Image 1 (tube, rainbow, N blue to C red):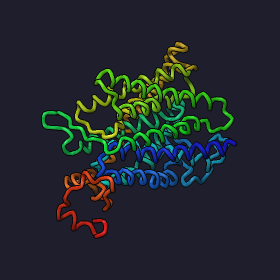
Image 2: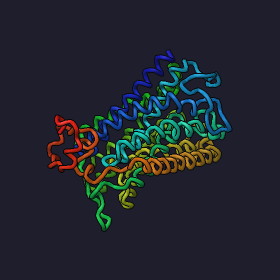
Image 3: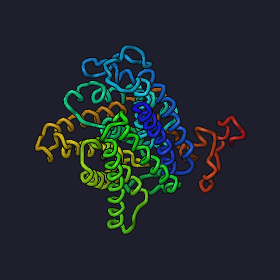
Image 4: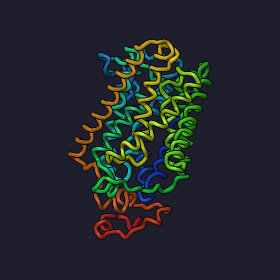
Length: 418
């Protein structure tokens, strides 16, 4: 039963990649939608292979100095130190689904202007080294886990780390052409298909039940029902908070904000879904939604271009959700038991994980840029990354068809694609 449960929830998490694909494709301009899909396929293909070969061993192998695992590469060797009621293969499948989600967070923040080849190289580094080493610190027997950090399903390890990695990438690559004027004003790049984006959000919402409840790794765990209900309540609260926030502040309920508000609620509850009450889950989701809106405005004020809101949704909500465990956890929370210890550990863990994600992404992209430019050219960006990198233009992109320049036409080998 445990094996069936974990395999099913792993499949639900993998389905979230369809959610990422639809959400991001709906938020960006149509001329870049195929590129979004290709990056998601890169995440799930390259990410799976890299985590199998290297990442899993670094994350769950025998601990070395609390910093990294030293065996388990290709799921080989003695891994008896992992206490499981399921097979090692089943456990790997579940963890492999997690690593794919991390790299997909970064994908959205650099949409519409990142070089596809450079992104492939970064995906290798993220899924092989950056995320697995950080994951070892909390979940694999490393030093943050020994301190007592609590992150049940990954508000910090997955979302905060991935969100700060996304911030570093967005800053380093720079904004899309024409996004910000010389005087600092921001132009709106209209989403190509909000209904498509909403379907993507619903798929992510569905997969999140596997994300959170599946982290029990046991079909008979009595917490499954509670985890599911607090996940639902927090997502609903985050969406409702942003719905009313935009309604009263701007005089209209903004659809992209409500979509991201629900996702922020999901991110916020991920760390504490097994540790907080249902009423507190509503509070956590609502605060996550408002913080997401605040962070979105913060990015705009600093001319940082994040087309899908990866940093506000994942980083900021992930930070809040991790801190909320220290505040509201039924065992050790500041407001529930009057103890500061758990909150202090959560803050220490957050600072380390966020700094790791930001710094290693910055360094990785700097090194990649030596061999492969990390940013698309102006011409590639103008005509769209679909035709520039994949030789195809989505059929629904007709309003954005523009005349292809002569050098680009000659660079395409397949006349049928032209």
